Length: 421
RNA sequence: GUGGGCGUAGCUCAGCUGGUAGAGCUCCGGAUUGUGAUUCCGGCGGUCGUGGGUUCAAGCCCCAUCGUCCACCCCA
Image 1: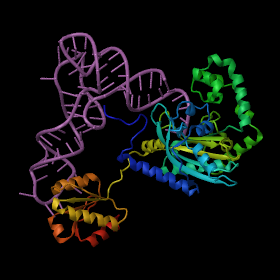
Image 2: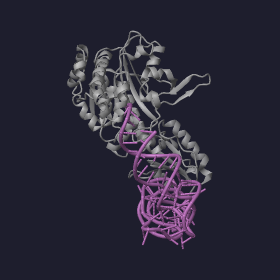
Image 3: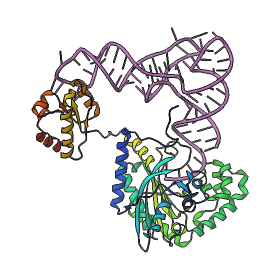
Image 4: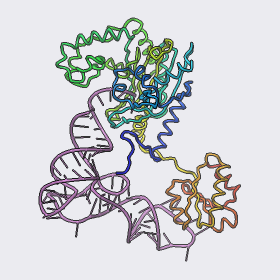
């Protein structure tokens, strides 16, 4: 048995990389244009950071982390998400002191889950976080930013924005009590998962897909009755601003998913084109989290995009993209010409930065060489035979357009390739 | 963790009721001695995921196991 990649950890092969580059570059460009700054974070942290940050009782911390013992006995974990690390770093370096900060980061995250479409054990997230703003304007801008990203990628029409408010922690606690009190008498009629959540995380029962459970939920207490005035005002302010910005959304009172740390706003961008894992971006406000991780009380809001899912969606909507082709394919007829060809290629790379030149390192018949040049996707072929070397020139042949073949000295070749690249 | 589908050449897949392992694409060579894309000819390529069982005989049937995909769960 040959060695395979670890389950849920994928190789991205050269032919699919063009799409990834395009998407990553777009994400970075648009996010930078909103004034967010990059922060780079370690892949590993003390396990306790995630236990405190993500929530002890979440599935992520309970059973999905890659945890190992360091040599001195410390418990370390591969990061399952980015927000906790981001806050840890910001606190550690004093970046949150009396100021608004906006960061972005991207990179692999790790969760031990059963892989399926759009869900991998190593997956890429692109996150954006805003600290120090109590106002709903923070969420509004994050949503505007995410919308701009999806616009730029041409996938926005396929997405819907769902928003909800979870109010303040006190509102949530009160509602939680009321919900449990309502559901308890029906406990025996709930599906198994929901029954279990009655103790652990009753709010998530609201999101159950089980029909009977949903029927029971019809008459459950309404969350909005438990929101205090400030929470209602906060949410109303956000909705109003989104309306002005003409960003369409639907309020989904059942949107209670996500991690434990959310307060007030939660939102998700969802597609129906990817099967079961349709959430492409999720985020919200997490006002208590900085304090919970040892910092001074600091409001925060942010989101994480699932880059793997965005790539899948882009592929589903836009089909094949052309892979990144080389520009120049250089071929020699006989081994005697290699020295000449190697030197010309080296000089060309110096003269024309950004030009991609492949030198085919087996000599051969001209038909063979051109056939290979054609298949490489190169725009032009450079040919070196006995004649070219003796005259110190190159034969340039256009492979993609109807232009006459040329024989050029080095200066003329540089000019020609420089103009077209 | 639970359920279902699928594992045959590098890739996509045929393979009938159990009876000698197939095609297309790719790759290599030739038709073509300095001009590619089309066409034609030839060639390389296999522990049929793995291990056991039934049988005169297993790619096909049975059991186990691994991998993979999809879904549940959870999440981005």
